[in-house]
Length: 263
Image (cartoon, rainbow, N blue to C red; front, top):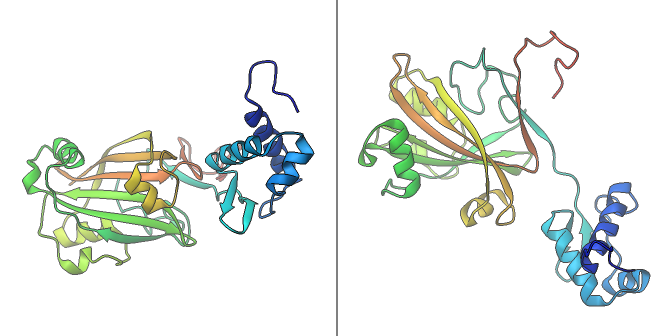
């Protein structure tokens, strides 16, 4: 097997050939790939080229290397569609809100407290303080992970200008709807002020929380919620596994068009 005339490295050409077999179903999800010597013989390349191709496919999350066992085709990640209706989502009821039978992350999603780190003036803390127009010293923070089917799909950091927060509310491992519970604790109603969307690569902390490689694509949904009088009262920064999630902005009522109800 020769490299493409375009100058594509031989290992990448091999990786593309293996990816084509995965895409066609010749190597189905969960299947064990042929061994290094078998691939080397079949494609007429040395074992170093095979090793590089396999490493490339692992970085692309197409395969999983199980040390001492073998290399296996990864199943496709479940696709989660997060609906955002700009006309009806006025009230911030949290990512697991009961207003929809599925909530933001789908039926069966569970939000779990990871930590309530002290607000010490980190770059993230300063950014939250800036959005809330308050000093860093007046903020409290809670970090959570949202899981669906046992798989972590989102890591969230939430800052509020009140506290100290009760230990029971911020106990690691506690499950619940954190935005709703914070609002109840403060005796307030929260409404959306603004939300912004972006993308980043997973850092070491988020990679550990979400079980993804460092640098994996994460969707970022951040924003401020306020009380009905417009006082900024909560800043949230949610990092979501970008390989399995998409945002959908719906501008028409369900049932108004040919794509109504599609997820």
